[in-house]
Image 1: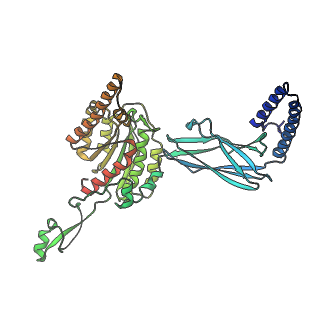
Image 2 (image 1 turned 135 degrees about the vertical axis):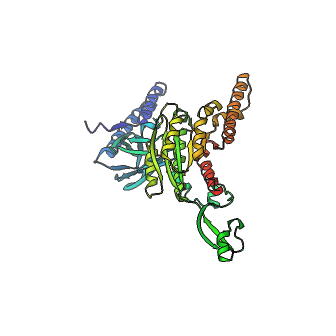
Image 3 (image 1 turned 180 degrees about the vertical axis):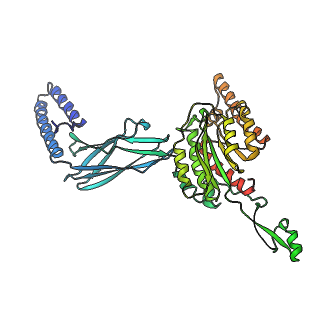
Length: 443
């Protein structure tokens, strides 16, 4: 009974059977076809048993395994490799059905391959996860058939495995070169002219032609009887906190990823940029309470702490409590810091409810509010309206888009920096704003 359990009849057998039945039907009009139909039955039976013997004689004629990465990168294509070895003495046709995680909801996944005798092939495919968490793979099913393709045998390899999906660490490779050069400009980073100088004192030195006259130290000049200037260096080790709103406003999806996941991916890249710039990177999330807190530090393991904390950020459906955010910032962040607040405001009224808390945070820190353009509205605005309903929808979409720009002006009126960006450009725009703030010495 075990012999027939992995036994499957291929569609080619049924096609041949249908052809033979048609021959018998046509033989009613042409008797000669009756003999041809009988011969066809004999040939089909012989080929069937021959194919059965080829495929089923011997044990474990093939070997297969699934090669998985340690973790998936959320929102990116991740490569999976299947290694299949043909131990048959003939060329074999494979149909591979991998039981991929249920999160992808792919019901017709199938790969085909042809492998020469005594050879090993690597078959690749890619998966693009759109949410963080654990992804469980099932069994690896391999259906084997010969060139006759009348029967096939199923081999099951119990290679079930779990792969965690982390925030998009693949983006880190794109932004490893953080100095403003030609490579970084290709990714959208902008060169920002430095204004003035920073205030971190380094030493007093003799004046040389070209030094900034504003840095002359007149007391030391009087004592030494020669011009002396203060020399400054770039300020380093400044705290930079990424604060992620995980309330219901961040649930909105764009291209499969929620706004929360876009913010998480940007936070990971931004933290790496901050540490490369010798500043301190920290983060936490908030909604009804403060979670996933990582204190701003420059330790070697800081990126790993941030990665693990971002992995554990879970969205909820509450309205975020900005008053609790203000209290926490006031209590736990004692030094003046750059605060990158990832949230979303759809209307000016929504901003005005939280504006007192944003103004209070901005008094003690440099606050940058990051929120999102609705790209679906932009697509609706760009379409040509042909009916009254489409005109109405387009006017409403333009109203919401205009209100986003009013939010930017409202924040600017109170000295709060803001970034209004599309989800796809979130990382680039955030890095550009950080580099601008560093170059202008605003922190």
